[in-house]
Length: 265
Ligand code: MLT
Image 1: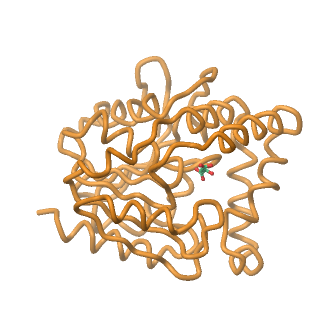
Image 2: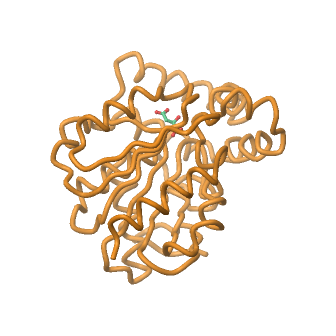
Image 3: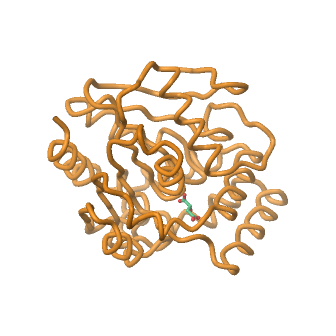
């Protein structure tokens, strides 16, 4: 489905009934990342997964993008869908950076947060330089090269070696990301603010989910957030890497279901 949000069109999928659960994907991915949640959580929530600007089937405006802009796009989609009750906002990796921006800008519309495979801190100077190197690689060699360089770190070794169908699905998502979208995402991540201080003031319930074998963002980042957030629970998922929701969907969905049932209604 498609929705016009101010000057751009965003693609999204929605399924299920109940409390809105907004799903924000990572980089360089799209809403297909959330297939197991769109299919598996329909008994629990009104699940909404969008292609953030520049990704998947959404419009690709010229970069730069910012996490604030991506958060406002998501809020605009909720408006467009007529959703006024506060949503549970879930983000994986870059989507987690956007979820924290969503909370910062739309706390009254946030019922709770799910922070998957993400971190609260900003990029270090070395991290920022790596964003620029990735942008140069994408411009020079295209998104296939980005997909090949990131894929082995996106998944747990066991997934990467043993589940070729899933590997192909992720490779396709990455390689299909429009160049301008990838460049916009890289800038949004590079320039995002540090949210570490924000955490102590988030009174809403937060579920942190992280793969024990995440090679892109180590599980220690999840533990840091868990220590600072006043109302959080942490689920570490064995045999899962960065794409924990795709690699171990049953564990992921069970944690989300338990979390939602614990504080909603
Ligand atoms: C992601 O998976 O969204 C990104 O790789 C996260 C990052 O590079 O910080």
